[in-house]
Length: 533
Image (cartoon, rainbow, N blue to C red; front, side, top):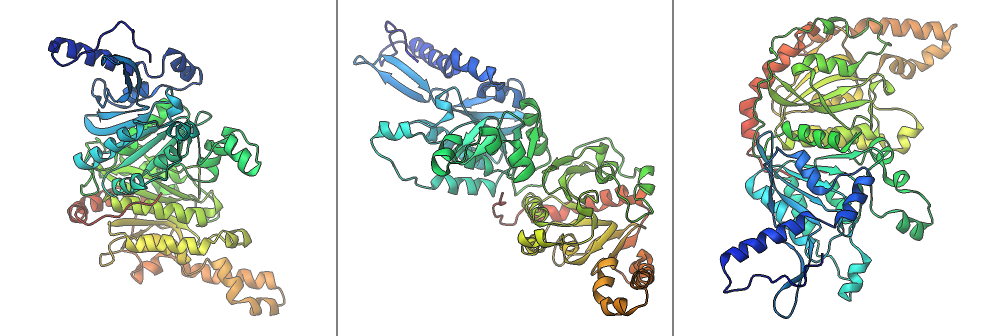
């Protein structure tokens, strides 16, 4: 921004009042960002500026900016400031519900959020600050990454050092990291955004990709607009690259606040208990008949979860991807927990490749932040068929098993209906390897090595084919074996800790989550590894 050519800047020997005046003047220039025209353009596109976003995210009056004077400055021969461009990144400390956080974001009104000669120094301050102070890190991303114009200005094309990524990985091992993708994001900012524990984008307003449509068109000849290439339909619903979507920036920021609220400040802490006012011994009557007597009939699994958790509040991650598996956060008796559930309305709850990836990531996240896991299982096994084979379902499922085996946080599992095969072993094996397997059965529970229908077709194939009426013979065998699936028989053999009245599920879960707190405090002192996106 041009400076009044008659304005004289402070110099050594001048009164301190003049220095203070200059500090205030330059800070005021920084708040003007890229100028009113570019701010108006940002608003016309339905997007807030970075300073407006930060104000909406943190508690009123709590933001303390770091580096407000940082920018590209030009001085005349007499040492007077003649031009000043603020850094294209705004960051500092703030509070969310009284809890300190580090927050930073790209200023799209300056070079499209593209880094220039001061941008990188600002970003490098925010991440170490979060690690050193042990507070969550939130990034509000809208930037286009490296610009070829900067190469021309520098006179050479440099080789990246790679240190930013090491710092990002170190961050993921220490504190919660959340990213709001709030506009078009490409290149390095896209990578920064995805190096997070939680990501959210705005439908119709946000896009994310390695390179935008012009580069894609030039490189491979594919002609797509920004939304088709990297919008929410692509990355929330299809690729699963981004966790959640929001209808507005306000909703996206609220989702970030909710995500952070369930996690401790660092991986070396345990999430504090919150008074929710929901009695731990509450017995939801609706749970008694939420599972239909007809084992082929579906039900609402999210309603089941809401009936159990405190005040019905459930924050779901990746709802629109890998829909047969449900993952999210809630509280039980005020304690933060991870929730894993099955959705029988999607592929009957079977685990396919995306569901296995979703499961492994969520278990790693809960283990890293010392959150106990509550499982509501209704899983008939791995998804079958040629499509599942082409997607390497079994190999991805083994990764889910490995994630369970490596996780040490305690878990409580409720077998609400089906639990068959290797896929169902993932939640079975979740928890400390030398601890108790806290598995409770509902009256609708049925479990085994393979679902009865498929097992009969495979094991009795020759006998069925040789029968005078193959269909009737197969049904007779299935009926005979169905009598063996009684959860009472399994309970007699010790397969579950207990068979329970579904209405007691909340009380049992609350009790064990409370009992888990001393163990979680010990687990918090373990060395941690980064949670892979």
